[in-house]
Amino acid sequence: MSTRIETDSMGEMAVPADALHGASTQRALLNFPVSGRTLPGPIIHAYGLIKWAAARVHHALGLVPEDKAALIEQAALEVSEGKLDAHFVTDIYQTGSGTSVNMNVNEVIANRACMLAGQPIGAKDPVHPNDHVNMGQSSNDTFPTAIHLAVAREMSDRLLPALTQLQAALTRKGVEFWDVLKIGRTHLMDATPVRLGQEFNGYARQAEHGVDRVHKSLKALAELPLGGTAVGTGLNCHPGFAARAIALLAERTGIPFREAQDHFEAQAGKDALVEVSGQLKTIATSLFKIANDIRWLGSGPQCAIGEITLPATQPGSSIMPGKVNPVMCESLMQVCARVFGNDATVTWCAAGGGNFELNVMMPALAAAMLESIDLLTNATTLFRERCVEGITANRERCLSLIEHSFAMVTGLNTMIGYDKAAEIAKESARTGVSVRALCLERLDELGITAAELDAALDPARMTAPDAGLVGAGGA
Image (cartoon, rainbow, N blue to C red; front, top):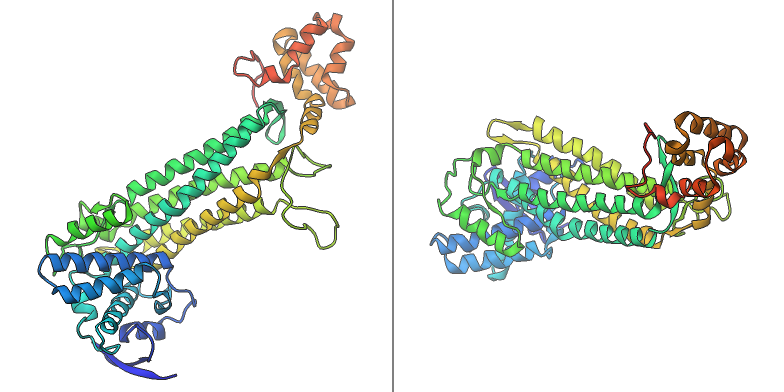
C-alpha cells in the first residue's frame, strides 16, 4: 500500500496515499482497533453541517477569507451529504470526548478543500485542519453538538414518520375491527367482553403517545453547546459565533436549535440525552407490548387464542410443514430489548463519564442512541408493513370464546347477585356447560326471563361504558 507522510503536533505519520484523513486520524486508527465499528453516519453528517456553518459565520465575521471559506463550505457539505463517508474511519471506542472524530472531520475537509483548490492532499494550504476548519471550536463543544444534531434529525426525519404511520395503521384496524366482539383478558384469564377494535384503538393510542414523546425529545435536544470550546468559557471563540452558526443549523435542518443558556451545563452534563434515551425506552416499551399482544392474539392458530390471523411472511419451521410464526412481532420485540440495553449504556455514559467540565464517554453514548433510533425506525416500519396492515379477524373464533367463557356471568351480577353468579361460574368451569345454557335451565330459580337473560349476556352491551356492570369487583 502506497503512503504519504503527514505531520501533526507529535511528528510525522505515514498515511495511505489516497486517504483524505491525516496524521491525527491515523494515530487514532493505530490506537483504537477495538470494534471495527466506526461512528454512525448521522454523527459525521451532522459534523459536516457544523463545519459548514462555522466557515460561513467566520467569513461573515471577517475571520476567514472568502476563498478559504468557500472551499471549506463545499467540502463540508460533501461530508454532510454522505459523499465522503468512506474516509471516516475512527473506531467508536476511542477518546471519550470525540477528539479523534473531530480531527478526522477537520482533516478530511481540509484535504478535500486542498484538492478542490488544485493542491495535493496533505498540503494544508490553502486550508489548514486546525487553523481554518476547526476555528473557534473544540472537540469538547462540537462533538456534543453533533450528537444533539444527529439524534434530533434522525428522530424527526425517520422515527417520527414511522411511529405516525404505525399509529394510522392501528387506527384503521380499530375501525375495521370495531364490530368484532371478543373476550377480554386480565391476569391472562378470561374477563368481560371487549371489542377487538377497542384493543387496537388502545395500541393506536400507545403509538400516538410515542409520537408525542418524539416531539418532547426534540425540545430537550434544542439547546446546543457549540461555542463553549474547551471547557465552556468560549476561549478562542468569537462572541457572536455560536448564535449565528446555530441559527444556520436551525435554518438548514428545520429544527429550532438555539445556543445553550449555560455552556458549562450543556457541555459537561448529558442530562438532555438521558431524557431522550428514556423517551426511546418508553417508546420501545409500548411497541413491545403491542407486538407481544398481537403475537398472543394470533397464537395457535387452532390450539391457542387464534382470534386474529397474522400475515404469513416465511416458513416457520425446518421440521414442521405448514407452520407459520409471528416473526415480525418477534423481530420488533428483540429490537425493543436492545433499546432497553442501550438506554442503560446511555445512562452509564452520562453519569459515569461526566467529571467536572467534560464527559469522556460520548462516542459510546452517541452510538447507542443512534442505534436505538435506527432499529426502532426500521423494525416499526417493517412491523406495520408486513404484520399490522395484513391482520384479519377470526370472527367466529372470537364469538365462540365469548360464549364459552364463564366470565360472561358478570353481566348477571346486578340481576341475581354476586354469590349466585359465582355459583353459576364455578359450575360452568367444572362442567364445560356455557353460562347461558345453565341459566336457561333455571330461569324460575333465578327469577329472570329468557329475554332478560339474553340482554344481560349480550356481549356488545358489556363493551359499552354505560353497561351497568356494578358489583363485578376486582380484575
